[in-house]
Length: 161
Image 1 (cartoon, helix red, strand yellow):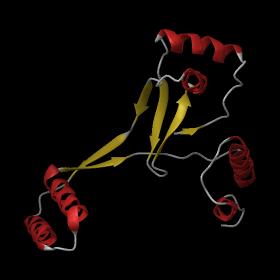
Image 2 (tube, one colour):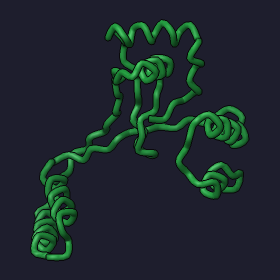
Image 3 (cartoon, helix red, strand yellow):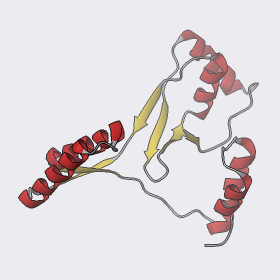
């Protein structure tokens, strides 16, 4: 999960109140939005509730939003036949292993589903442009243990395009 702000301190009144709810099992869920571009959930609301639940050692209740767009896929007998040939070749191949079988199965499922589902994510411009985004990203880096090496992080937050 990617939080959109730093957690409040442990001695904050809101965190203390939410910790009591977490102990009693009455904690409302945190609201998350799936961001397809980064492949992670963003915390929209409930930062203090999540923090309180984790401080209490309780699994936080979560409510995830995942906007999806569906487009019908017209049947195409030539594409379908090609999909079968490709899957059959994958099944006969000895070097594909379980991953190859899974890949072939996913391809067949996608072909016969009839609709193409795409997660919809949007981005909005940040006030202040690239400099404001960079300042936010670096602030996030200071309070969040991000598992990227220093060189990769410097490239990610650089001002070059």
